[in-house]
Length: 451
Image 1 (cartoon, rainbow, N blue to C red):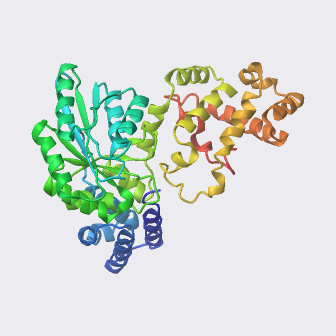
Image 2: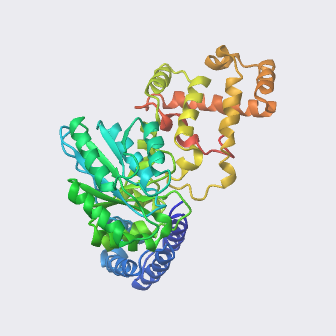
Image 3: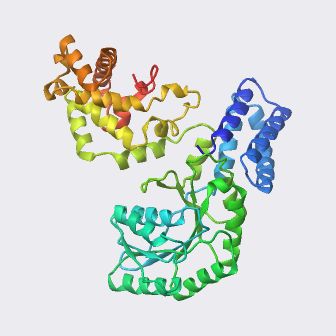
């Protein structure tokens, strides 16, 4: 995951600080020196690192910090605040025109950055916010680019405008804008052509589109895995075409992530969205404060809650909530929660957003456990799933055979389920919402594996 190495290094630095009862200026200076090396290794721009360390150290050596009861925590707080400021402070939001007018968004970027897929993802996100979205297929040079956009758009229920071969991207953008006017679309997203590298023809083409069509936002898609190259690309596009903001892709990949920490400071342009996976739903608003918390190991619980809300089946959750209010919790309810966790990306996806989970042994994350538990529950009769008290040795043997597992796994599931039933009854008076947090709570990572 992005920033994993940086996060590990920062936590080790902070751990050393916590071991000291009091801090002096030398302690802070040494810690900031280590932070500097960690940031440089994460591929953060050198000038950005230099300014960051200078500002952070100046704040951290103040008398209030050194004399505080918990100086290490104060240093961590200051580092987090500086990271938030480095990435732009407040989250940037697209300011769309009223629904009876057209907001035009032009997507730009090099080949391989994920621009075409991101165009569809953004369209889906804006559609879910109640907008009528039209995608324009303006990448006429890359083989299968138009088809790729159509396939992704089709999965999201979006319309794509394209023209037969021989028309220029400028002509396609202009015709798409006219269609958007005629059909009362409120958002037009233009997917432009990328290149393997920046060239003058590419820049002129983008400038010509902006002349022909009233573009409200030029969003540059950059690949986080390219590190400082992404920052250089952002600078060039910003200077030669004009960029209003960025979308950083592949932040879920094996990347050092330094581009995200550098781009805002170097270009002055905000990051609007972050691509966190290949699924068309995995485009997230970029929140500097949440990203800073993840970098220093504090997790991102707010994003986890939002993801739970987005993936939840409302009717299923209402049913679970009704049962819980009656003091009931069945295997069907349990299966509902397991399926929600799978939709959220499984244990590894959830763990990446939870604080204090860096030290969990990877062996505990047996994602196949989901499938085995599901097989066990589905091997039960309807009566057994709704009334756990029916369970007896002969039923367990039959269920084990049906699920293709050892009876010990069935016994383990039954035992853990009974413990969870008790927990649900204890929490019943405290519960305000149905969903993931209510069902699993602190029991989620107890013991080896899920159970």
